[in-house]
Image (tube, rainbow, N blue to C red):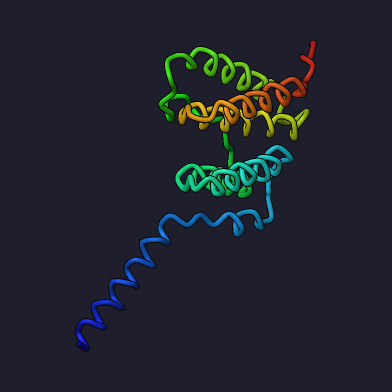
Length: 165
């Protein structure tokens, strides 16, 4: 009887620990004091929002992905829009998503992150959201909301005027 109790307790402990592996700690990363540029600070906030949304949907893997990007941004690291190769997008969406990423990267490279950091961060986060939802491809309203968020924020990104020598 004693060994049965011990084995039951060990089994319960293992079950409890296995549940911890899917736990995503958004609060700790959300509470970080963000360093770096205004763009990086805004990215931190935007990626935390995405992580919390995915956490509510019990999508631990994507919640952790966004937490990791938020943490990197908060630490002042360069964080770019997600490469297309990291997601398995449906063929019907690849051309549109690829074109959107290309034009986003172009505006970021031309100073959009410096000129309008909040809009640039929102556009990048919404692009990553769009890719994540497009990969799942089972919630058309979520795909549309992320794409609309990207389009709206992208339109608000200003780039630096070229310097004429």
